[in-house]
Amino acid sequence: MATYTQPVQALIDELGRLPGIGPKSAQRVAFHLLKAPGDDVARLAHAITDAKARVRFCSRCFNFAEGELCPICLDDRRSSQILCVVEESRDIVALEKTGEFHGRYHVLLGAMSPLEGIGPEQLKMKELFIRLGPEDVQEVILCTNPNTEGEVTALYIARMLKPFDVKVTRIASGLPVGGDLEYADELTLGRAMEGRREMSS
Amino acid sequence: MATYTQPVQALIDELGRLPGIGPKSAQRVAFHLLKAPGDDVARLAHAITDAKARVRFCSRCFNFAEGELCPICLDDRRSSQILCVVEESRDIVALEKTGEFHGRYHVLLGAMSPLEGIGPEQLKMKELFIRLGPEDVQEVILCTNPNTEGEVTALYIARMLKPFDVKVTRIASGLPVGGDLEYADELTLGRAMEGRREMSS
Image 1 (cartoon, helix red, strand yellow):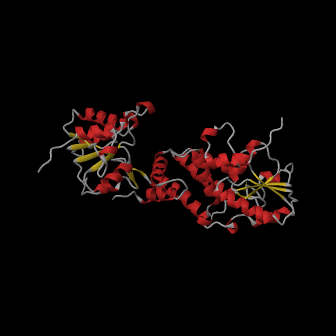
Image 2 (image 1 turned 60 degrees about the horizontal axis):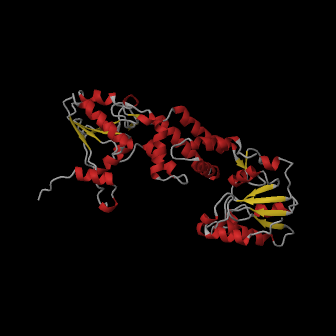
Image 3 (image 1 turned 30 degrees about the vertical axis):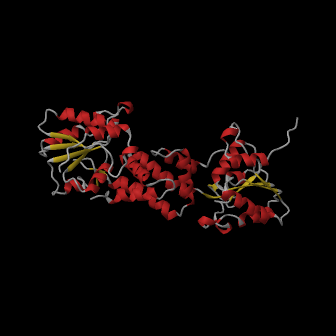
């Protein structure tokens, strides 16, 4: 008697498998759904199946796409000569918001992490290298996250790209704009010093 | 271009409406689902619709039920003379785990909260009072949470029950078993002092 009826327990279990949702949180969400209007719940279930059915990965860059190619790859105003390598589609959204980049992307769908058993084979790495020639890529900007996994991944790609006739750059690390030097962690501060630039006056 | 394709955005939006799931968390879960095997995602969507379709509230105590009555109300070994009032079904699960209670429950489906506009009418309060006579209830144990909303709710029920010939008790507040006096907050400690009992030696 100390558990829920089967459909409730099944729902809690399924919700608990989602990332960042612990048992307490899964229970809370399940109870919310059971109390919520049927229409709201149907909308959620539909959003899940609909997204899963309609969304796939762009066959060129592995961004989310509804067709064969993603909207960015379909946009012929975007230069194919500059390629920005990111870990996830969400990074593309962040970068697009800056309005600073007009090339194409390549989504690795993760970062290398020996501890989690994620090596180059688990990522869209091979797919990156075979794009260079056909798309006439001149510069690869490595925009993986500035953490251990992201750095390792960037280093690996940089090494692999050495034999290719292509410029390889890494996105800058440093103090966040509007940030306070006092509150910056020492790693960031070290990077900010290392990456200092001469001021043109 | 700074947003996701429609089905992805719809999924993030729907997930973000769930309690305790912020925009970042919704995005994370959405990305997880889009990358996860189709079977896993189908299982989640099915768990949601299945629970919603099969689970309803017990017509007597408002616990989760698959039929007209919940398993506890259906169990005729449980005494109808002691009624334990809780806020949510999850509280029943917690209390059942103690194995200490053999009466029936009444789920209010929430607690009174003037700030959120939740009064007695928004809860299963009327449904509680009409159970007392037919079920020959001798004692009502108020097991609402020991926080402001729960206390107000307990106080309200205690007052409403005064005219009835029924014993009304409140679950004890005090130090958690295995807890440390030093780390108890002052309210809990105050309650623990107030609720002290004579030791039989």
